[in-house]
Image (tube, rainbow, N blue to C red; front, side, top):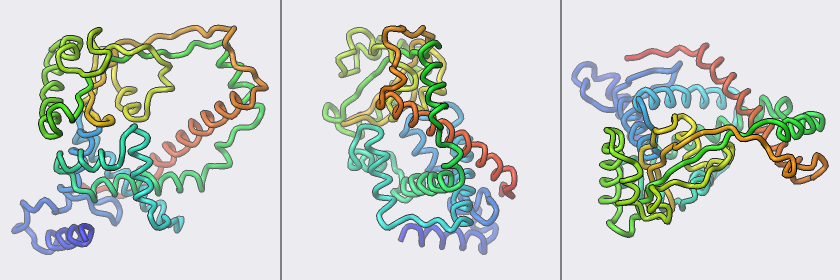
Length: 309
């Protein structure tokens, strides 16, 4: 129903001319035959902020929405269809990857004024793109046994990037969800203006790391939790994410340091160990198919007719 209302609003905006200039459903951008409205952009901004995005969030929202349109168009050209219930399952996967329940995600959406359709669209484009990339590049992305041998040998002799993070954990149970969101946003603004992350963590964080300024043990950058991997990898040491959902609350994450650590030969994986080979197989496949997908996406964007209204 929300999709129907949105489509109707877009149609009225198109035929209404200047009288509908203030209509949030007026087209802002067209990507080939698909419309991105001002409402779409505003909603994606809110979603990105809820996920902890930093920097020029509006620019990122426009970029993502433009990419989403060409992803859906690519799926349509390949006649890919999602099975019934795929979006609900995708939302569950999204929540699980962040260590939360679907109900937690929905509460954050409601608290921040984000339309459920906005979240569904976000999940849907990702699911379609996964199918597109797999259909086109699965065979090329699958590593050979020789590839696995080379990767294991490389890992045994080359440094690992280790990242140290700090956290401020704010549970909903202490203040309630709206107040926690407001506090998290306020703390992010304070930190962005120069407040000490460690001091804020000691005062407000309810994690066991609070006494030492929220600092967590160092970990390989490749093993960052999916809940904030994307946001964190875009940061430099000293920078912090916006508030992001965690089980039962919100958190701010700061990059403390990034270092290269030489591997310990005594802990090198056995090249014949089935678990080690399967782990590196998955890693290589993911890296390759992601790279192929990014290249293909840039190709599609280069061929698209993108018009700002």
